[in-house]
Amino acid sequence: MSFLDAREHGSKVGSGGHASAQNEAIDRRERLRRLALETIDLSKDPYFMRNHLGQYECRLCLTLHNNEGNYLAHTQGKRHQQNLAKRAAREAADKPAQPAPNKRASVRKVVKIGRPGYRVTKQYDPETDQRSLLFQVEYPEIEEAARPRHRFMSAYEQKKEAWDKSYQYVLFAADPYEVIAFKIPNLEVDRSERFFSHWDTTNNVYSLQLPFKPAQQLAPAGGGGPPPGMPQPPPGMAGAPPPPPPFQGIPGMPPPPMGLPQPWALPPRPPGA
Ligand SMILES: [Zn+2]
Image (cartoon, rainbow, N blue to C red):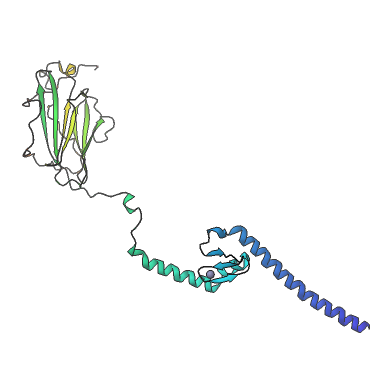
């Protein structure tokens, strides 16, 4: 009796030990399943689908699963992983045939082709006693549908020359040409209709007429040898050291709108101006 009891007891202990090991395994699987459910968002899994019978399907492997945990276990299995690898390889092979999205929005790197040709004409309008500069920059190889731009730069903004508040700079830019800059007197620019830019798409010439306000030019020129009136690109400002070729004139270019250009010199700046 006691023997049997002992056997029963022993048997119970044994079976009881086996059952608890199973329970532990189930508990562990359940804990892992819950952990996986917490960490894996099945709504973002493109292959996870719940069918009308309440079962779960893997749309990649076309397998059925009774619960989410079973599905999750499947996704870690060999079959699903192999199918994932096959699909990735197939998509990689198909890719070159598809247009690359938004590639054009990336930053272009333009290979510069050198400085443009240019001409600068000094003009004087006796009626308004106004001096102006007419810049004409040739861009025969400009990029299609591009339009040249100009902008002013103060002596303090540029970093190529020593600061001199008597001067400012006007810059011209059009890809793929190098930017060129002209050193001009630091006089107030007349921003009326006499100030204009024009892009001649037939001859690819960009013109900028830059008039100075007349009141600034009443001081007589000469005497102390003012700086030469013709503006020059500052050395190094446009990149390569060799000067651009001389401007040969533009066929079909209308004459400057303010009559024949007359030479003029910079008025000396009154001290303390
Ligand atoms: Zn699968």
